[in-house]
Image 1 (tube, one colour):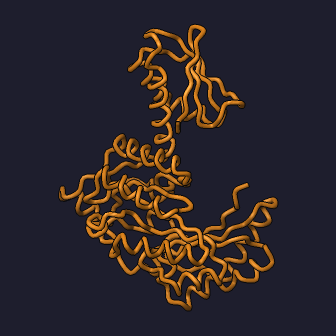
Image 2 (cartoon, helix red, strand yellow):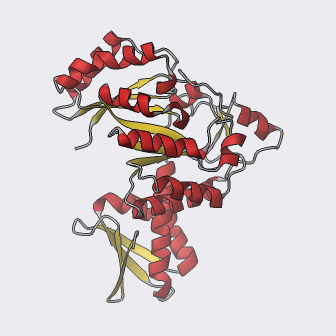
Image 3 (spheres, rainbow, N blue to C red):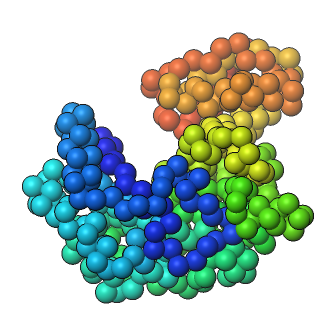
Length: 346
């Protein structure tokens, strides 16, 4: 059972840089004040009460936790120590920058019950990092991974395809280099142009062109395939929709979609559909069978995959059967007494 996450947002607190893409308050939908101990204890108690026995995890999102003054880091972590000791909370996670981790910092986090750190890697291409105003290089990410893993802390990585100077090739190379470091999980956030950022100014004057939606979906589908084959879960693809993000005039350009992950997973299933249907006679009526949890992905958003199958292969889907015995990444196509089958990740 997944843990019940109790999030606390420290939006832009501790950040030593202002990256070209960043408008943290708009992205997170939260202000920049640090939570107080009473506020944290109350939120944790409420979560434990409603969680019905689920494991509770405290998460500090946004900002650069390990660039906060040490007194502030202690002020946030020390109220959690008795709750960890009593098992009222099971774990603590936080986000930070690769260049804000060294051996001493990793030991401090471990000593205070932090068991997961998410690094804002964004890219492993130094030219892309410079263009994005990140202020760190790929070698900082490699060192941060080494320090954290030595301290026994699980490390996740955030990647941002589509940054200035990025290409599909550099994005996939960044992914390969991160996977070689042994991350516990990934988040993939395709770059969007948010009002009030330097990137918005670059876009407005024609010096930056974001990925188109279909282009970003295709690229992220490739990333998801590579990561899954490597055994690394991708726990989020695309920004979490918030009231602030969806307000008119907030996102000016780029591959924004509130169901971006569904588009990405649908793209993978469509590729499998087209591959399996390559030998089916045009004009055939077929039945699809997949795991119940995959039906919407196989069909695609607004039946997009079924329409593409009809347009590209001349095959009409009569039924999509939710089949509990079907493995989660498998698909069967039945037609005229024959069946073809394949896997999303062969």
